[in-house]
Length: 360
Image 1 (cartoon, rainbow, N blue to C red):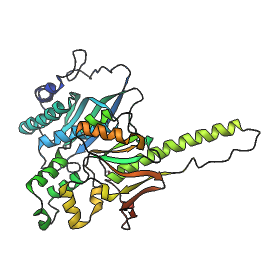
Image 2 (cartoon, helix red, strand yellow; image 1 turned 180 degrees about the vertical axis):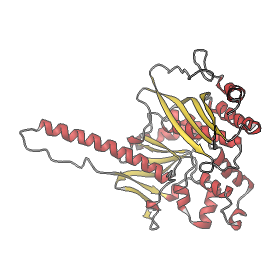
Image 3 (tube, rainbow, N blue to C red; image 1 turned 135 degrees about the horizontal axis):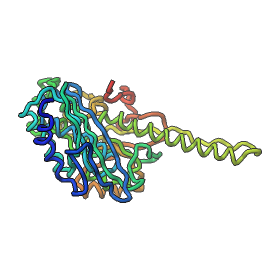
Image 4 (cartoon, helix red, strand yellow; image 1 turned 60 degrees about the vertical axis):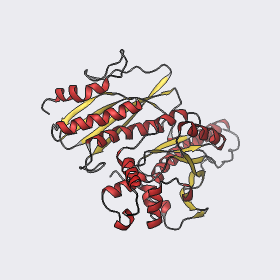
């Protein structure tokens, strides 16, 4: 790309200035970050492709904001404090007006979440953005997907389904009758949820030690809760296998130990009437009864978490402190998969088999 270094110097290097004097951001072959003592680094990466993850008509500001926000949401799911991010930007042309707005979007989210741009690369081609973000967690305190336990409360932050409904609004795939029911405020809420999601970075750090497992809801509530269950089941199986093998070794020459139900699978019951919804999504459900959009549409960038009942009151105190709603929507149980309920009765319309966003 012509004038690549001028582009970097003009639009991106100013976004690196919040680093300390001992650290190195944009301008060298690589970034140099200081890892806080007794902390581990968390690294996440997301790629956004024009026409797949955002529309060609999307504003440069919104594209910039979302490309960073989706990574901060992944860091939040792990309880990490954001430290910095790098950007790989492929552009079809050196459009100065577009770059000014793009840099403005990066600056806005960087200042709000105190996360600097520390490096990256630019090249020419179809519009694609890859962001890699780094964060810190105290040693062994990262919140993982693999910690769910039977009896845990399943909960989510804020509301679910707004981004997916916002996409329908942008694509003009909603009926004129339904669109007429939406207020100007509801329209704006849906568009903001889609284009400028707000990662739950601040509250996530306060939830370390209180939450057993968590996942960022990007592919859809059921899909991302499914990721928690899969990883937790894998961990449970590994631990159970290790225990049985150890028991077998100790009992050599004796009668074999009785097998316990250590391999019982973890699943979840979700009460649909408890899923937190905005007024716009409630109107959509009243008109269509289309729960699949809310459960599998994705683009929420909220947190799905499992919490021991013993910690639930503490989690609610954290939620109140940070002004973030955390709603109980179900429970981890011994069963296979996720069962959707309405007022305690299993639904009969196949919602338990609904899948989330498919990348391929």
